[in-house]
Image (cartoon, rainbow, N blue to C red; front, side):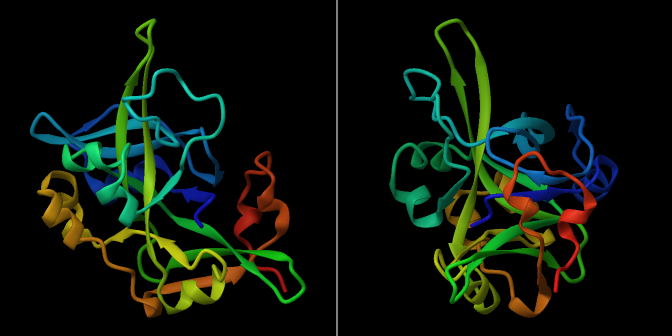
Length: 223
């Protein structure tokens, strides 16, 4: 669930989130995948900061950089209870990933994974809730990385993501600051499944299954 997502352009993201400091640079993308660097907003030194992070969390406690793909998503239950996610959660290492939509896969009666593009009806740019960590290697290589938090799916997403039955945590604008700088209890209260009536979804081409494809045609509906 949320194996891939869509990035808005940088100007649209900055209008939505108004970061006090912006160290990021990116363009709109239609097929963001694991291990790619993505824009994120976090709270740093008393103000919001926009930076680039690798999608797929590498815990600070890792002895070496993983060679395979790291977890791009993590269920909220694991965030609050299990290492390596619990430490950044308790330390307030939470961030926002700007998104214009995301993809989900439905397993059909013919055992075919049909991809869907999902977006919000009234918000062209929205916030995916995530946690981040900072890994430092033996040669002082530094990688800041993140994982999107997943919640139980709402009615719409239970029908689409019918095998994992989960959806990414989408924050309401009123909760942006609470998520970034609140206590773990306050941040946890901001994690609520998005109302299904505020979302739209349609089937898209299986071209999204390839990491190479990255064009606006990926989000166009198919019959």
